[in-house]
Image (cartoon, rainbow, N blue to C red; front, side, top):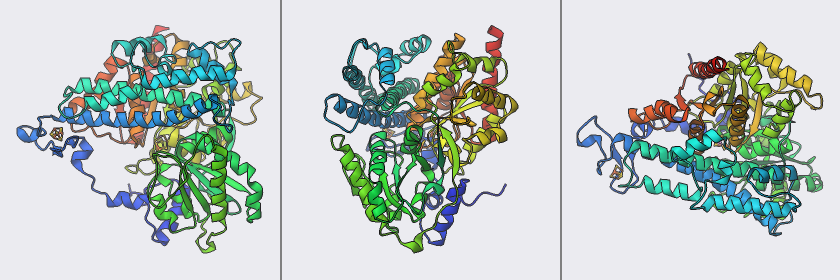
Length: 638
Ligand code: NFS
Ligand code: SF4
């Protein structure tokens, strides 16, 4: 099979890559090639540099060279490296959550006038879940208690498990996590403990280290639950919404601002400011201000505001190459430092906004919740100024844009299923599985990783699953891939869904005439913190079936996992009893023991396991097999 020399399958990105090549502009695709071959020791996870006696490498099967200087063996080094990635992921997700929490707290304290409780309904539901009194109480008071509890989840040292995990768990998982000693009490302490556990001369037992890692992954999930739920309270529960995706949404006649990163706290304000400053943009000669999203900030805004999704992580640089992007506003995570290098070749202004995220060459504009709208307006005005400096010779628009339907929170899915069975909404899903109409549910998640052709395996796996009647939900850059490729709409149902899935989706549509749109082939759950919504979904199905999660025909897949956050997510999926496919190898092939723990022993203990498979056809088959096995067992026991 001839290799695609472009290393991407996204049509919008292919258009822009030509522009890069013609103008000799360096992109991530060039740097990926320049990095080859990548280090074999690092790849296998057997390079240790956690103390200054190193770097140590496992160079031989036996003898002194089979261990680090301190005597650490391959399994110790591999497991330490792996769980330090989980700690990094948990820290990232929870730092995002902490920022949303601070904003909610400032709202309670009356320190910001620019935010509000957009969804009192969500606040009440959440409070009830957390055991907080709601009767005859003021919303701000309730939110005060909710934020207090969330803060405790960051730092609590005794008495109880983290509330933003435990309150969301079915009883069987609660017991499982307590019995295996991986239930976190808090986020910060768990991450710190993990760093201490894996420091030089501490834990050398690979099983103990991996279990520490799983606890860390659950701490990651605590952060995600805080992030998702408080974002819903502040910015609204996502509902089905129509929009468009890919680089063609960056329009010549508009002032274009890309919001990139993860945190809705800033980007939601930018959307508001853009609406208010339309007249100023018009005075500058544009028709208005066009906000487009990149990565998970894009997913957040797409889900709640219907903002266009410009692109996903591997192609973030391409937005600048259109020549009409006036500002690249970034918050945190997955932001290539190379963006400034490209901005330098164009009129595009790059602006960083968070204290822990600066890039040399970018302008820094500190974003504060007390002055949120003012700050957002400043950002929009910087873009309007930049618009006037566009170089017409450098304009190279993309023609690729595809329609999509997003906005499938658990609440939205409950409403949709509830039109068929109001008492037991999720029975609609589980009955369809038991009857054989659909084959199960798969949550597709994760990043771009140029070890694969961009988006190729996301799309190949999705197509194989839906053809075989799997109900697919998606988050993050996986959802981004489907949105960009025109796979997240109703036309795609016609084209790619198997007969069972097609009839299931049509049935949902017929029962929901109030929806202003037809339903898509794949259901967008949101950003990567919204993988927590998927955990709600699998548990709702478990409850409906009266079983624990390892019995539910539900699987996860991250075909292009890249970030530490993805390692944390994959690990909690396994802890939650979910077969979890990963298409890019984590650094663990240097130890058969660790590989075995991840793929088999995890299954014995938690009922979930990793499926490492880089071939997308084989991967899809393995996922289907996992679903089929579970359905078969369910039917026997019914
Ligand atoms: Ni998730 Fe989102 Fe994308 Fe990966 Fe990065 S944007 S939080 S980490 S690359 S899916
Ligand atoms: Fe080498 Fe041990 Fe130090 Fe790691 S902890 S760098 S294996 S001496």
